[in-house]
Image (cartoon, rainbow over all chains, first blue to last red; front, side, top):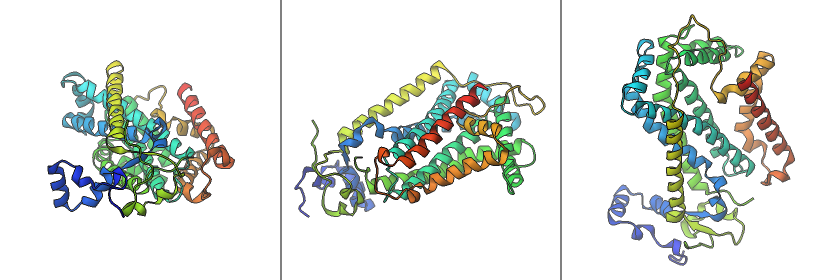
Length: 231
Length: 147
């Protein structure tokens, strides 16, 4: 290979700030970082149709930050939950705004994940060699929906309680495993503090770990496969 | 104007599958910084949009949960409305099987549609099925919202 034949072939480490090059060298990640630093994008993919997944990710980051702030004041118990959300909405400085941003970003993320799915579908970007990336995307869609379902109960108001009751009833009507599913989701026959506890656990611990793992795989494969060709 | 690169760079990146996907003569631009800057601007735009929506329409909080008082019209979040409405209008088993089958088909899609044809207009079956599902979902969501 002839280095420097095209401008982009120049070794990236030489163009990096010294400190960054040093860290990269000591981490033994020159090749990986160089790949990212020299990244090129086909011009057809700079179209706005190709930005939905990225925006969904931006909204995810907003959800992480606002979620971390909300957990500071939220109490996942039947007695504490509603009161702590009232506290967040009325007493905590900008608490109402942080909570509202969390709600809007969640709505936006669901919309953009669906729109991103449609873009990938209609440009056939799921085809070889991107099969596994498509599947990781479907998992991310399901995880996003699960985030919505578990998060909806947390304020412990009437809408939250009854939507969860209806939702878990639907899961309970699955053939064969229905009752098992219902009891597993609710932590018993009814919606109680046990339900709130496990929904909270799923929403702030389990699902975040799952989504970070699958986002990592999703982005890694995008880097490896590149953006699919023009139609 | 940014540099325009004529081809994916050569050398150790030849392990990338995509080099052979791009039509000859297709142009590329470096990600850093032209494309990165436009992405960062979109990021700030969306921060402003979400912050603004939250300012104009803050999240509501209803009455405290009460297992003894059933509200008049219980509805799930809007993105579950289509499923909810489907369950209302068809027998329960069908209402559960249809979405389950759709999810399985969605996961298996890359193995079902293996042809190299990528233009949606040139693969009418996949496109028609998708459009039917999309329209049905939208109709059921609206139906669920107004009923």
